[in-house]
Image (cartoon, rainbow, N blue to C red; front, side, top):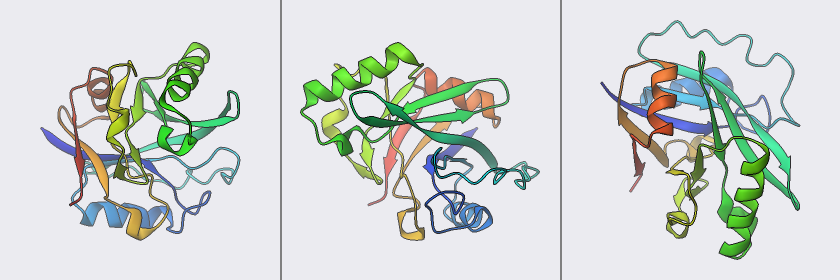
Length: 183
């Protein structure tokens, strides 16, 4: 089954502009099959995801959190929860404003402390192709890191897999997806 998804989305639960329901409607209109809500850990309102109803078989809603990890400064890692599987994505390395050697060191240091399955190759949904290198030994993934309506749907992944959370996460971990960008 062909699926389209976004894995880095903020809502009013932290510093985004859209409610959860508005976010879901925007991504549905854009033709997405799944999204991951990943509000910031230090801003997230307690219980904000409790009202999510994932009863639409045609649209999957992952919940997660954008973790603030202190490693020679701070970096962000998304933890996205499936039913049994968990996905960890090192977020927006281009926003670290460091030379590539230092970025690779930072990613490696974080990977020693926690699992890393993928690294974003986008900044706010815009391709940062300099991070699509073999020296970064993780899956390279496109996300839109949306905080506003205009930020939705700039970058996403597509894949052929079963329509369930754990199958999607396993496909990502195995690199069975492709990155897509709005023109």
